[in-house]
Image 1 (cartoon, rainbow, N blue to C red):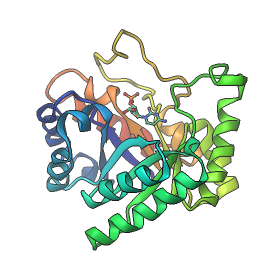
Image 2 (cartoon, rainbow, N blue to C red; image 1 turned 180 degrees about the vertical axis):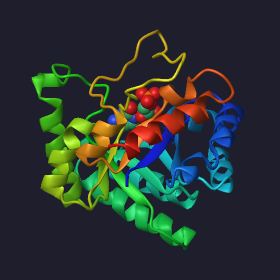
Image 3 (spheres, rainbow, N blue to C red; image 1 turned 90 degrees about the vertical axis):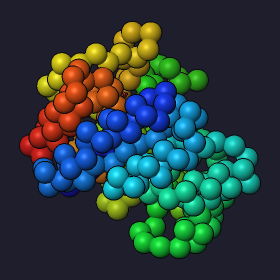
Amino acid sequence: MAELVIALDYPAMDAALATARTLRGVAEDAGGRLWMKVGLELFTASGPEVVARLKDMGFPVFLDLKFHDIPNTVRGAVRSAVATGVDMCNIHLSGGERMCRAAVEGLAEGAAVRGHGVAPILLGVTVLTSVAPGELPGGADPSAEAARLAVCGRDWGLGGVVCSGHEAHGIKQRCGRDFVCLTPGIRPAAPPSHQHGGGSGGDDQRRVMTPAEAVRAGSDYLVVGRPVTGAAGPNGPADAVRGILAEMLGA
Ligand code: C5P
């Protein structure tokens, strides 16, 4: 069964933790497990403390910082990320083979520092789900490029990729069933009453799917942010999560 990951894209830790608190137990009621995602905005504001606080609440945590730098720097960044206790983190596959292999080494080193439990998952970002056909330099097709990068990621030792739902099926066929596909750009078929927007108004995602479509395509993890965090009212986020889980279960 695919699992749901909530993108806590907030400018401060208190707001993120307040939403996380309202989501405790919601997925378990539906027989599932809910992840929390800490991205660039929240981590830059709060630092690693937010990871520890979410782990204390019992959530598995995906640290979505999309590292992309020289191999030695990325190796250290992944090592540090894993040592903080995250369960999943990611790098940009476009950083190339040496960078990705260095990240895999950093993963093992960080896990050794932590020294317990389930090995964390290292994912490679293929092509961002906000990129539409025609937007890549040279006119490359985003889905073809994502599939090409995914095969590289598998060969370089990563556990899976971040891709759109449109690519998940093909990537599973090429890379194997156990190669993880994590899919952002999820938009519920039945959106709750919400206030979400892409900052300047409008949603920046382009290669989108509904929860049911992404599950049917073979995605292992579905990432949803604004449809949950922007849902109106104190019960809005929890109700939105329940609705998305119902769509996933009905797939
Ligand atoms: O609000 P929304 O559901 O669009 O949030 C999607 C989340 O997934 C954001 O935090 C974004 O940074 C992240 N993400 C993405 N596309 C990727 C990788 C991560 O949208 N390829």
